[in-house]
View 1 (tube, rainbow, N blue to C red):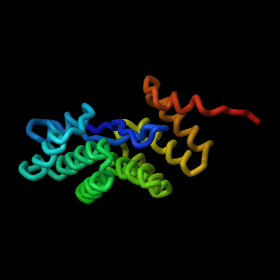
View 2 (cartoon, rainbow, N blue to C red):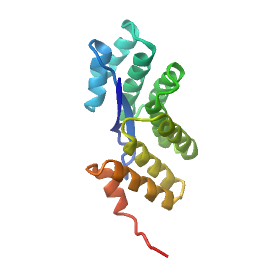
View 3 (cartoon, helix red, strand yellow):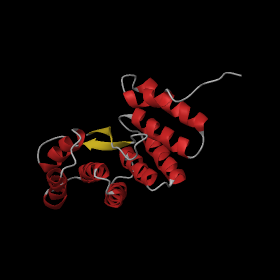
Length: 181
């Protein structure tokens, strides 16, 4: 299984990134994964993930990944409570799935619980994610919300260094002026 992080818009100023988990193979779980990866959040895609969870015999990691994928779709629809419930269940099933923690951090950002969001994103990064640039970008958003512009700048810079073709960190960095002492 390979995981990835996808964008989900929470505010007009910036787009936090949320993490999907790629479930390999065939069946509804794999189709749910593809839908999440492709940015879908329509009711049929969410239902597909729900049906997979209800009807398929999934191993623990794929069940956790499918919960993350459905949660990502719910994030895109701004159903933060339901998304967080899916991430919580995923973490219970697979406590080493970094993407679940990054996603839970995104839901906490939506609730303006920035200190908690920072802790969750840090935990996800420590566990490992396939696209750390997006987790660093999220951490930059949180740092900025906490009033730490220096830390935010460094996180946006790290995100850009890790994903030089990704426009969102570059856009954030244009707002900063760096002065050397």
